[in-house]
Structures are given as C-alpha cells and as structure tokens.
Image 1: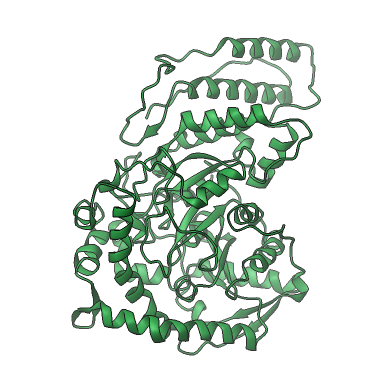
Image 2: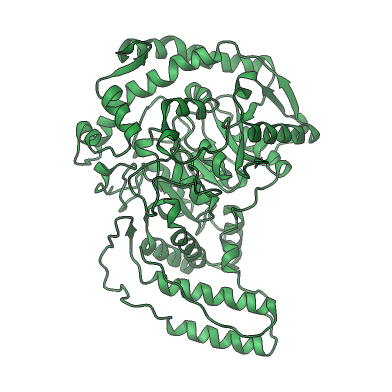
Length: 560
C-alpha cells in the first residue's frame, strides 16, 4: 500500500492564517493523491481503472487555491467561514460531522479524504482489510452534489462508516477474517448496511476482525497491513484491540472513522470499544436483521453500532430499527443495579476507573442498588459454549451455501489461519463436540438442555432482577481488565473466559448492552469501559441513559 507524503513551505505569516492555509492545501493534496488509488486490499491488488494516475501531481485547481490563499495571507485577509483544519476533521464525532455537512461548512469529500489519509498513515494497526477509496470518494462527491442549501438532511448524510468484514457490502470482499473467503464478493448489501446507506452513510471500507468472529482479541495472522500479527490497540500498539469487531475498535480509537458497524455474539462490539475508548450497542436479540452476515449462532448473533460517542449510536440505531429521536434521560430517576459477580477479578486500573465512574454517577443523582443474582455464573455457563459451538456448524454451512461463496464448511475450516480458531473448528465445531472435564462430549444433548432449560432460566433471572428491584439497568466494568499484550497466548481459552466474564451473560439472555468509556487506567493509560445491561427491548431507554451519563463521565483524549 503506497502512501504519498507531500509538504509545502508557507513562510512567515500569522499562525492562524497559516494553520487554515496548511489545512486547505493538505485537503487538496489528499484529494489529488486519493484520485491515484482505486479499491485497495491488503494483498496490494487494485481494481483496474482508466482514470488511475501513474504519478502524483497536484491538480491545477489546487495551484489556484494555493495562489489565492497566499495572496489573502499576504494582505492579512481572514475568511468569515475558515475551512476546517484537516487534522481536526478526524476528531469530530459522527453527529458533529453530520451537522457540519448539513450546514455546508464541510463536504463529504473532505471528510472521506481525511479518514482515508488517517487510515493509510497507520497501517501497523491492521485495522482494515479493504479500503474502498474509489467507491467512497465517488459516493462522497455524489452526496455533495445532491446536497441543497437549506434542505433537510438524512440522519447520516455523507458520513463515512466502516463495516466489519463478516457483514456483506455489495462489490467488496466479505472475508470474515479468514483466507478461504478472500475471493467472496457479495452482489448485495446486508439489510443492515442497506438501511445505513439509505440514511446517507458512505462505506469507507471493511475492517479486520478475529477470524470468523471466534475470539475476542483480534490476534489474527491473516490480512495484516503492518509488520506485526493481529489488529492492534489504538492507545498502545503492543496490545490487542479486542474482538471480534477488532478493526472497528482500532479504527474508531485511532480516528480513522467516527462510526462503524460490527457484530456481537458474546461481547464483540463492546470489548473492542472498552479497549479503544469508543461507545457501542449490542441491541436486543431480533432488533436488527441478520441476513447477509457470516454467523456463529442464530440464537446469540446480532449486528451492533460502534462509534466515537453514544450520541452517534442513536441515529445508527434509528436507521436500522426505526423509532423516534432519543433524548437524554433525567439521571435523578435512574436506578442501576450493582451485582457482585461483575466486579470479580478486576485489575487495579479497571477497579479504580470503575469506582471513580460510579462515584460520578452517584453525584449526578443516579441511584445505585446492590443486587444479588444467584446462579448467574452457573446458568450462563450452561448456555454460552453449548449454544454457540453447536449452532456454528449448521449456521455457517447454510450461510456458505446460501450466498454461493464457492466453498463448504470443511474447506472453510481447512483454510483457517489462527491456531485458536483452527483448534475450535477441528476439535469442536466440525465433530459437534463440547469440552468436558475428561475430554469432549456430544454437543446435541447439552445444546437441547441449554435451549429448553438453562437459557429460559437465565432470561427469567434477569427479568425478575430488573422487576423486583425496579432497575433501569445493571452497571459494571465491560471487561475485568485492560487490553492484554498482543501475543498468541492472549487468545488462550483461559484468557477468552476472563475477557468475556461480564459481556457473556447478557448476550446469552438476549438483552441489550451499552458500552461507554469510563476513563483511562492510572498506571497503563489504557481505556476502561463501563457497561449498562437493560431489560429485553429497552434499547431506546438504555441509549437515553447513556446520553445522560456520557457527559458526566467525559470523553477520553485521543491516543498520543
């Protein structure tokens, strides 16, 4: 992947004027260099195009802009509406960006160009599998041309978003992070993507992930753009990004994009945002359509929005699920349950950040209620692996056949690159087995028991807890620890269990979960997440509470 570097000496001038001048010329040069590229994949392939530029040269209109701005600078002129600084564009939240786009103070092409430049400047994070430069820029220009002054804007008008690579996007590979699917190019958008596009969103590219979504670290040896293995943490590249929506988390944290769409089976939109300082929603089961998404478990899988802020999740959720606007809740009426199970095995940074966040919530008027949920761990254990591992066989086989991927389940498994995922498929998914104290057992009887007895009991435990204590939600640290060091052992079964301790129970019960940043660890400087799990179907109420809590906790600073 080639990256164009260019610099211009501006000479002495007023610092504010120089800043605006540099930003404008930078945007022009980014636009020019972007025209040189078509659709990129990490293997370096490019789609053919008669318009591809063989060498970089600023377009003639750039020369005019430079000359005009230099003349204005010489006379100390100052525009009434100075162009946005390119480096600042990537720090806008999605809602801020859409507001600027709708007001005509920013173009979609400028925003897409800024994000493309940011993504190409940080290949070591391994965040993207495919950047659709040509497609995103063409869509941005079309959006800019169609925008009329004073006209109503769609909720995501002209906003670039990233899509996890297990979700189908028309004309782009849908690898699900595994080599066997690298040549699978869908002919239609998944319904969730189609609804986001209908709301005005522009697909910037497809993001990397834990292979086949079977893990929570993103330590995937396939599809790396940098020298190291796996998707890396935006705040510390020596650590994992979380998973399985790993690339989304890294891209959001590193300001390569302000909104993204991922999937969540047991924590996969929430863990990456906990590790990279973003917000995400696992919706109630059935709220979003699941067609066109590479599956693990139809009982547990759901798409979910991820973004820089809770306010960004709201228009994405509305675009997919419908409904009226969501307003911040009055915190003095909010009751949040505190369950001891979710506060076990916390590292020092997570405990301190969580305690500080809870203290802020109390001061803001939130009522915290100590609650016990007996047999939570036992019931969750009887549901999680039995359901996911058993359903993965039939669900993935059906997906491969339905969408004419050209491979079957055995061929998919043969091509798996990640040792942890390979072991799971060969030892458990393909033979339909489950781990047991003395080896493995047949999965079918355990699965039937999970669906008939354990899962309904887990759902009843949650429903009774919310009702008896008059709770809006449970509150707890999203992950018991900060992001671990990126290494093969990060994806060990023991580590997997530790990282999903708090996200897995609500996933198995099918209830909504909202992740938002709580703060940075005092010793590591790494993000710590706070999660709210609400009753089934309470997604909008959960978002309303999140909107009110977010300013209380404050935004995290960008990575250094």
